[in-house]
Amino acid sequence: MTENVDIPKIKEFKTRSNVERASLFLSLIKQDSVLLDQLRKKEHEKPKAIRWYDDGVQLTSPSLIQCQEVVSLLTYKHTNIVLIKSSPDVVCDLLPVLLQNEKVRDLTIQDTQLTQDCISSLCNLLANNKSLLNLVLTNCSIDDKAVADITNVLQTHNNTLRGLFFIKNPRITSVSAQSLSELIINNSTLIKLQITGTSISSDGILLILESLTINKNIKLTLNKIHNKDTCTEYHDYNIIKDRLTFY
Image 1: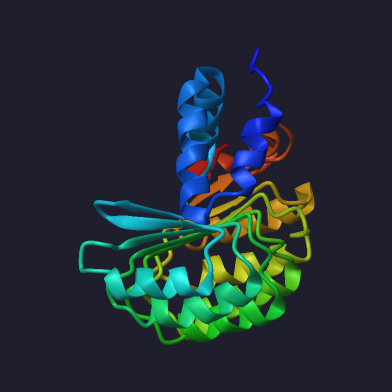
Image 2: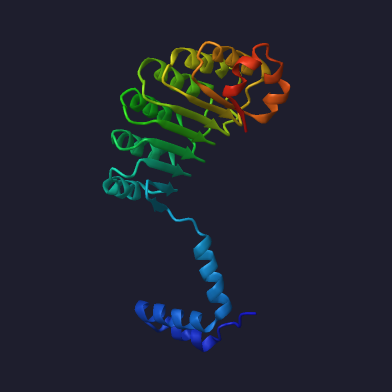
């Protein structure tokens, strides 16, 4: 058990300058192996705000200044951007800069509440971006209105996105089945669509499956429960089963 620091040492802290306090505190920690190990463990477990990789960067709860620094350091090698636990304001400020960058190929936004302003900004950028290939939205409070907005712009103004992933967004309901079905039918460049962790009912899934008989290029990922309860009973299941994945 760690011993308590005695009163003279506390008084000594109060009489020192800031630099001396820091030095004294460090020396006390070094003498206490248990406390030192705990501090090291805590620092090790603390997620870093910015993590650079060979092909991209991950930003966790970044400030706007950190985002600006990251953008200034992006090179042609950094094609994969992951944004985690960000504020809506940061997303709205960061998205225009990122998607104007022709280097970015894959964008993941995770554990971040995307407001209507964020969705509007994203849609405006998707309408003009010619480089983004994959968009992953995980646990982002995506609802039916957001799905309708995103799928609409992908049908009318974007012919480059290859993968669209809605993951862990329970506010997506069967209302979105029509929008997703129309996207599959009308977008000829999208080849991967994932809609897992949503609240789409069996009837909604059946409507989406119907669209796969028209667009024979796209692969669809659904919840495992739909494999047993819905998909295997669909009358054209054998025709589309090779393009279905269950997660």
